[in-house]
Image 1 (cartoon, rainbow, N blue to C red):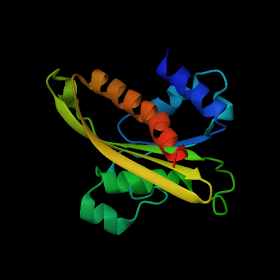
Image 2: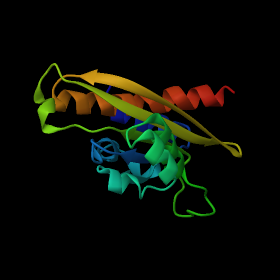
Image 3: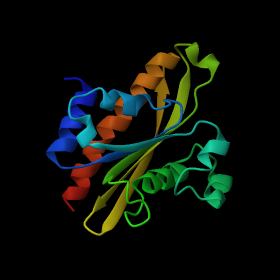
Length: 169
């Protein structure tokens, strides 16, 4: 089964609405979901921020964290995921209940199939009156295309893995 189709089905079956934050995939992950039937029922919004200056403008990202940890860190990814989720009172148009942040860079020299790139992910969800978040850093190798595809797959498959773990709490 197509991963994006699987995730849209998962989100709809649990009445979840997703927000995304993407850097080097530049919205490709959200676009993959948007191509699926039912996507309007489970997608809220997406942020694309590639350079550090843009990452600084993301909701939830704190300048001290960015200065201390760097733009491509789990700490910044967690702040970005939680910021995308946003408090409903401050972001009434954002009905998101789950969010992911995918933070990394790919340069033109990543066309070498032996290239290895570290990438940070974070997932956040609202469960009851609390927001939960977790993050991880993963190393990917391959061509630029292969790495982007792997990043998208990891970000999407992380949603049910994370949400199901939180739901069992």
